[in-house]
Image 1 (cartoon, protein in one colour):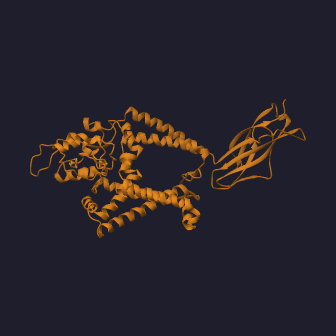
Image 2 (cartoon, helix red, strand yellow):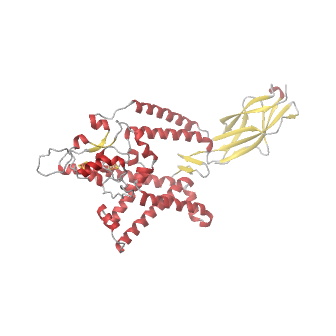
Image 3 (cartoon, protein in one colour):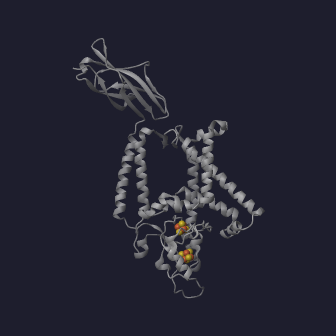
Amino acid sequence: MDLDELEHAASYRDRVSTVTEKGARNWVYALKPHGKFYNYRNILTAFYLLVFFGIPFIKVNGMPFVMFNVLEGKFILFSKIFWPQDFYIFAIAMIAFIIFIVLFTVIYGRLFCGWVCPQTIFMEMVFRPIEWLIEGSPGEQKLLNNGPWNAKKIGKKTLKHFIFFAISFLIANTFLSYILGVDKMIKIIEEPLSQHLALFFGLIFFTFAFYGVFAFVREIVCTTICPYGRLQGVMFDKDTMQITYDYKRGEQRGKFKKNEQRVLGDCIDCHQCVNVCPTGIDIRNGSQLDCVGCTACIDACDFMMEKVGLEKGLIRYASENGIAEGKKLTFTPKIKAYSVLLLILMVILSVLMATRNDVDSHITRTGGQLYQELPDNKLSNLYNAKIINKTNKEFPVELKLENVKGEIKLVGKQYISLKGEKIHTETFFIILDKKEIHDRTTKIKVGVYRDGKKIQTVKTNFLGPFI
Ligand code: SF4
Ligand code: SF4
């Protein structure tokens, strides 16, 4: 290493790779990677895009497969509607998800960022390849950016930004389909714009947001904005699997000279790992928060190793201990504790999901009402019931007294029919024999029946005279 490189290597932790010493943006011109991992990422991207754009169109029994309508507080997961009353299931699911992410990160580092995160997938596998296609290699892109605004530059920039904007518009539409459902999106498109101005502005806002991120902000989302990225430092330990440079094998680095017995380390200092890096870092400086685990540097280095006849894997998936001591990934007590916690949460979540009722009922005595005396030594109380049908189908339900003999008399109707996805308010009398009442307040249980099968038991009170 010459003096400049030594200085850079020593100071790389003092500044962000995408910001110059004067605080200006250091635009990253990443080289297109080629190799085994890039091919896997291409296959995964095709599958990912199919899933991302396809899911809003999937329906089971007429219900969207997934919908997160935050505006109306209606959430559908695996075609099951979750109401605000089911929020506790969501809360547990979110906790389980966060613990899963932590556990996953402790073991596999930023594998999620490089292979699953939509930001990386869209940026590196959709938008950047389009840029390479239109503007050429990093060298050509630099020339174009620094050159005058001639017809060629205007044409290329217009085409690129038009395509970027069109894809952002498509992403924004899909994003809103996850919130509103694809049927409503189609309806909005078909109906006059004036009827859906708020949603239209929402769509334009998201389009510009995605366009801004992918055309200009780019890797800064991963290196500076994303909270998950910033938390990596506290989740990693020396056994965490990361994209790592094998400094033991690579150092002392130096240029490769053909037909010369190599006495230096295996790193031939070709800079290809830096050239392909979408966050502009040099992984040879050690693990860095800016590394999104995209594996582009593995492909680049493997290609160079193969070219000069050295063993591949100078940059590879390994832990810090793995490199330093030749140790394999170990199952540490921290990983075991996280795994047990995750398992417990998963079990609780599965039980809650499996036992969740399609109907949720609440029965209360009508406020400000006392009991009424009826002929034949009977008493009655007036009740209000709120019954939620969480499915999208209409079906009748029956209310029966469970622990006392008596009668339930609906007000103004013969039976209760629950319309799909609706909250129903019912009013009814409970009529009891005086001999059933032994106290001022009698605790009673009301069973809610569907097709003769009890689906819920609701507790309430029956008010009688002082005894
Ligand atoms: S260091 Fe390697 S894995 Fe990390 S972001 Fe750069 S190219 Fe991707
Ligand atoms: S690609 Fe490999 S050989 Fe080339 S500089 Fe990077 S680590 Fe060294």
